[in-house]
Every structure is written in structure tokens, then in C-alpha cells.
Amino acid sequence: MRGSAMNRAGDCRLICVMMVLVLLTGCATWTGKGENTEAALTKQLADISRRLEALESRQRNMTDILAKARGAVAYIWGTYTFVDKEGRPLRHVVNELGVPVADPRGFPLVDVKGTGPLAVSNYCGTAFIAGPGGLLLTNRHIAEPWWEDEKSEPLLAAGLKPVFIRLRAFFQERVKSVPLEVLRLDERHDIALVRTVGWAPTARPLNLLLNPGPDQEGQGILIIGYPTGLEAVLAKLEEEDRMDLEEETGECTFETAERLSEQKRLRPTITSGFLWDVLPHLLVYDARTSGGGSGGPILDWRGTVIGVNSAYLEEFLGGNYGVPIQFGKVLMAGGGKEAATRAESPDLLRLYEHERAE
Figure 1 (cartoon, rainbow, N blue to C red):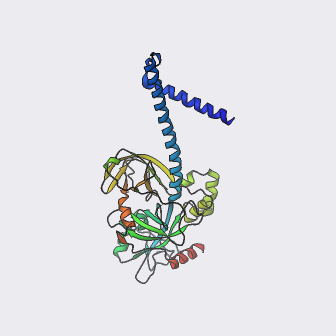
Figure 2 (cartoon, rainbow, N blue to C red):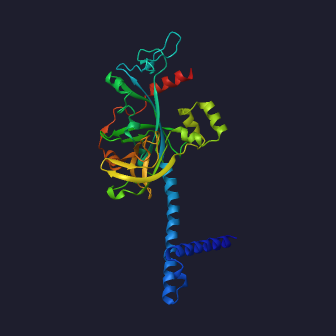
Figure 3 (cartoon, rainbow, N blue to C red):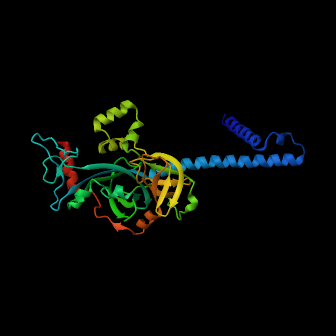
């Protein structure tokens, strides 16, 4: 049976070759006479067969590339707040009924003297393994979410200090999340170097492009990450499973990510497109992405990282942006600056979990 199947596959390939040849050469080729015509036909058949085999090989290689790349991509979850010089964290201001109050614009009022729950910001993103020992590259706005953030500017101007309550990575090879430490930041570009704490992934780092240049323009690319965060992951579930999960953990919470990871359902999304512009400081492409996909690798079709996905335009799907990978390589070589806020605060994490449990 197996031999028959192989013969049928070979026959199908031969038929495809013959059909392509008809389209390429026209029917006149088939009605020609003489040895020269037969020799030319044989050569053309062999050439087309080689091309088809090359396409099949590329498809097999792409499957391997994507499988390896997925294992090197991490989902990032962050929770942070701000503290004053005495270490007091921001809290919600509440009224006499204990209900948080807001200003006339609808923004919650927060203060270190507030008596309500801790005032925190949650966010998500993507990172990928770029070196040994758990070294990952991501965006600076993922490693330092208050960077160039309008809502954080007044707090920073008031002398408050940002502090991580959680900064975690989820990998395909591990059920539990892993704490992260921020190592180095690029001072001008949206890229950062982080490292896992207490555990290092066994997945191989992705290959980084050696010398990017304008000759890349027009080539096909792939982006791997978590656009829309957990929403895209939840959308793939059966409706009943999704509703049960949201009832148990809430909608798109850290606990949701934990449960999805336990169920082996926290998998990154892959999109494709073309690279349209290569500038010294910027890559422009049309591969679709959105919030949550920031920090993911931009791969060429050989599986080599050419950049880090960083921004998108909601109004124009053809204008998404990434940071060329050479800036990440500079950070890995010791360039850039050290991060002021490097890791989670164990004390604040305990306080946060205690208050949520009440």
C-alpha cells in the first residue's frame, strides 16, 4: 500500500510537471519532431521537477523554522505601580462608602495617602530568546512601560518611582511563569535586553542577522508574538471553554495566562507580509500586528531575526514598524544603559496578592 501511495505521488508530480511545461512552452513543443526537440523537452522536465522539489523542501524547512521559533518566543505579563521616597505605593482614593472616586475627566484618583486598593497598571507583550542563559530581547516599552508614557509623566515629574509588582515570561516548554530581570535599555530606540531569573529555557536562541541592508527591501517576513494579548488566544477556544475559564479567572488576567499555560493553549500567533523599507533606525512592513505583539521577532524566510516588532498604525495596516536587530546586538555586547528598575518587588507582590485575596 505504501509503495502504491508513493507511485501515485510520483505520478501526480509528473502530471504537474507536464501541465506546467504546457503552460510555459505551449503546445507546439509537444508536436515538434526530432532528437533536439526531445532533448530539450527532457531538459525542461528535469528543470521543472527540480524546482518543484525545491519548493517542497522550502515548505518542509518553513515548518521546522516555525516550530523552533515558537519555542523561543515568550508571552510577557507585567504589573507595576509607583512609590514615593518612603516606599509608600499609590492607592486609589475612595469615598466614605469605600468606592474609588475619579476626577471630572473620569480618571481614577490615586495618591500614596489613599485608603483604597493598590493602584496598578497591567500590560502584556512579547519577547524572544536571543542568547544563552535566558537572555531575551523585547521592546523598551515592554521592559520599561512608563517610558514615553503620557499617563506616567505626571507621576514621574512628582518624584514617584516606578516599581514592578510582576514581570513574568511564559514559555512553551514550561507551565509556570518565570520572573524577569531588566538588564539594559537602548537610550533612543525601542529595544531592551532582559533575562530570566532562577531558570533558563532550553530552547535554542534564534539566529540574529549579521548585516542588514537595503537589499532586504521587498522580501517576505514573518512576525511571531501575542497581538491583542490573551484575547487572540481566548478567541481560539470553544465558547464553553472560554466562558468557563473567564468565570474562573476573570477576563484576561494573570491567572488566565497561568491557566492557559497549564493547558498548553498559550501559543503565539504568526503573521506574514513584506518588508517595504529599510532605514538605519527603522524597518517598515505590512505584516499585521497589534498591541501585545510588541517585542516579537521579525524573521526572514530562513528563520533569521532581522528586527524587533515595536509599533503599528491602526489607521493604516501597511505601516507597521520594527527596530533593526543590530541595536539589540549592541545591548547584548554591553551597550546602552543599565535599567534603573530591574525586577519585581517581593514585598509589593505579597501585599498585592494579600489584598486581592481579601
